[in-house]
Image (tube, rainbow, N blue to C red):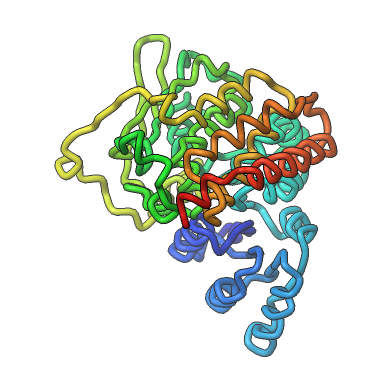
Length: 403
């Protein structure tokens, strides 16, 4: 009998991490939790360590790590607690780890995901920033390290399932494929009147109509920056030019994406909006396992609607497309400015309609360069964050909206 697959989950207390652990718990004979990581959620990590008994638990925040170690002492003595961002890369490259679920939101997930690639792991990629910030470098490391890259994002996983047999991301443009059709729900504000957009609250932006996601990704969905980042990801994963990646609004979130072939065929992957489906697909690939997801009831769905995106309503999608065409570190700058702007919105320091303004102004003020080293990428990331923070500080609309 084959030994269980050792799994490290980067971002274990987030929605993707918890869904991953749910799938793993259904197949304890196939998977073993080797390492769990989180930023500073001690209570969340404590509950996960009690249930899953990992060999290692990493808290990026040092004080949180000390608290976790005290709580686990005598209760889970076999779990070693590590602290600091460098420990993320440490567990991502451990010999006992076969598979790394890269589910840390934001730029913080870049370095440990790169380390997993260098170490030849099976990478279940839910972190967008590895490809958005450092696509060329990351794909080079995947190839050089002999890693296997499997996309967990529901859209990219749907595309993967629709690709030719035996194709894996990073293997060049898939044979016979003419276009990728990337679906988007349109978020909670797809039909909101334009005059109401500036008054929208973080709570409204995080109330996604079909998906249960973290707050940052929920806001990205509301602005459609999430889809813009996914366009960039698709170009790297499937070696496709941006003009062959079409975004389609599909509010039911049942068709997760489609692949169009030169013979006129279009292959679509359908399912209930539940992240456990793509997670289970990647964990067991090329086999299929039960994921705990309810079967899709087509009669209950009733209809499937599709419409083009409105770039005037959602300018963040346009900005992501422009950053891809600009090349170099433009996507790094885009991503960093977006993270700052979204956090400012969540903190009620920026109006919803000002998010794209901060990003566009940051892109205009900074000059991109070749993204030929991790040092340069991180340097431009830091510059963009500083620039975007200054721009947020200079705006006053949010004070009027939330006062």
